[in-house]
Image 1 (tube, rainbow, N blue to C red):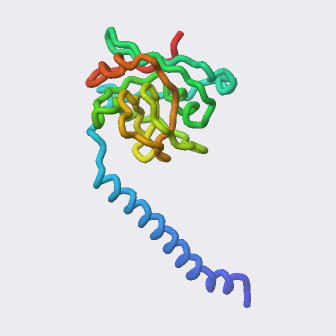
Image 2: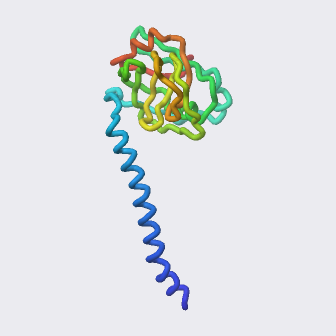
Image 3: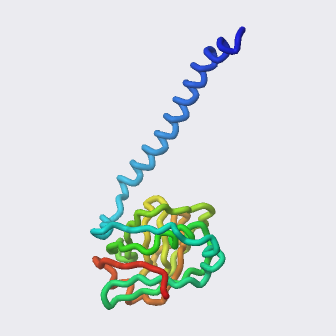
Length: 184
C-alpha cells in the first residue's frame, strides 16, 4: 500500500475523531451557557467609552507589583487597593490598566463591573471572601469588591486581586463611571 493510500484510509477516522472532539467541547460550552442563563449576573454596563487596556508594561513590572496601589476614582469617591500577591490574575488585572468601568450592586454584598481585558486565572486558588477584597469571579470574568460577606463561604470560582480598607467608599461606587489606574 502506498503512503497516499494509507493517508486516504486514515483521513475518515481522523475526521471522525475531530468531529467527536468538537462536539464534546460544544456540549461542555452549552452546559456552561445553560448554567449561566439560570443564574444570570445583575446587568453590568461598561463605561460609554468602554474599558481600555494597555499591555505595554515592561517585563520588570512583575517583580515590582507586590505592594502596588491601585485607585478607583469617581468624582470625590476614591478606593485605594493594595496588590499583595504576585499571581497571573493580578498581573493580568494590572495589564488592563488604566480603564474606566461602571460599577453596580450585586446581591447587597458586592459592587461589580465587567472589564473587557483578558484575564489569566492560571493557578487561581479560590477565595474565602472578606470585606474589602477586590476579586474576579472566574466564570463571568467580572471585577468586584465585597462590602458585605455575611453568609459567604469559600468559593473556588473567586480569585483575589487585592484588598482595601475603604469600605464606606466601595458602597458609593454604584452607578459611577470609575477610573481605575495605578496610583502615583
